[in-house]
Structures are given as structure tokens and as C-alpha cells.
Image 1 (cartoon, one colour):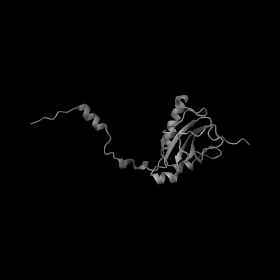
Image 2 (image 1 turned 90 degrees about the vertical axis):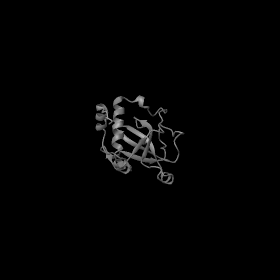
Image 3 (image 1 turned 60 degrees about the vertical axis):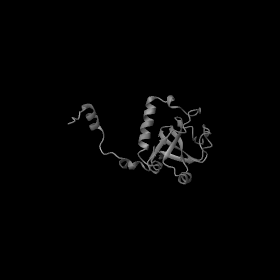
Image 4 (image 1 turned 30 degrees about the vertical axis):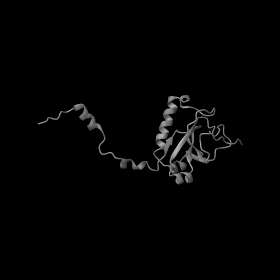
Length: 161
């Protein structure tokens, strides 16, 4: 008769793991926003790199990304903040003419430029894939490709009156 050895450490570890978790349990991610830094560009003077931000600024950014990824794009397009009812997410379409940034050569031309309002003048700038292009290529329209960190609101400058 073979005696099975027990390993208390292994048993304790295995018991601590979640039970019965499958991919179907995370089906609520479909349609929610995701963020990609594939096209991130920290080379322009108007923008910043992560190392230029304080730990507190980076923590706030990560918390916002976590919050924004809990909802879909349409939700954030309709959410307002501040006294003037400013949008949290704004989709501009074309790259703005009045910007201190330049269109990076590594970013495709046919994207929909957009920004997330983080706080005060801080913006997270990037783009969504155009709906028609995404549909024809079977791509998601729920990915926000982050291109710039814009702590001074220099991507889309408002005209002075």
C-alpha cells in the first residue's frame, strides 16, 4: 500500500486560491474602456514622461484609469464635471490645429483624437480607432491609445477672446 505524503504548505496555498473562477466570470469587461500605451510619446516639449510626474500625480492617474475602465466610452462622453459642465471625455476627431503638440509620425492619420479630463488643467491625450476602420478590421473601439501626458492643457488650446 502506497502512503500519500501531505505537504501542509502546498495545501494551505491551494486552499487560499479562488475557487471556480472562469473566463465567463469576467464577461462584463466587453464594452468597457481599456487603455494602451503602445503609441505613447514623451519626446515633445509640451508633454511629459512619467518620470516628470510626482508619485502623487502618478497615483491619481492610475486611480483615474481604474475608474474610467469600469465604464464604457459612451458613459464618459456624457459625464460632466465642474461648474461649466465640462465633459470628462471629449473626442475631437482630427488633430487640433491650435496645439503645442505635433502629430507624431508613428500615430496613424485616420484616428479619432480625444482627451480625458483628469483634474484642473491635466489631460490624458490619445485616440480611439475610427469606428468604420475598427469594424472592417475586427478591432475594438473601446481602447483608448494614450499618446501624451498633458499636465498644462497644451494639446487643445482654446482661442483667446
